Length: 126
Image (cartoon, rainbow, N blue to C red; front, side, top):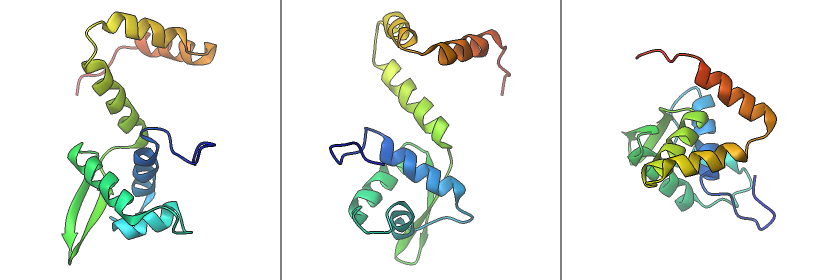
């Protein structure tokens, strides 16, 4: 889904691709991913390949060679991808308290309540 300007939000294509791969019954080629996302062909094949390569570098997708092409499968779900993006953004900010304070101040009541519930729940060790 594109914005009014015709451009996707940052990270939106990555999330859409991971969603397609996560729902697939088998690893997909870039062409199959593109066709699933945009049957009209308006989305460029090279954009899909570039995004899949970046996702592979981030260890969000696995890939294996199938003839001359690669096939890709999801290693992360869309929520994990967004959480990873948030973590990477936080890692470069020295004043994390200010960032988190501002982030929490932008949440609606339901999201703030959910966050408080999550913080009150002990996490399980892996």
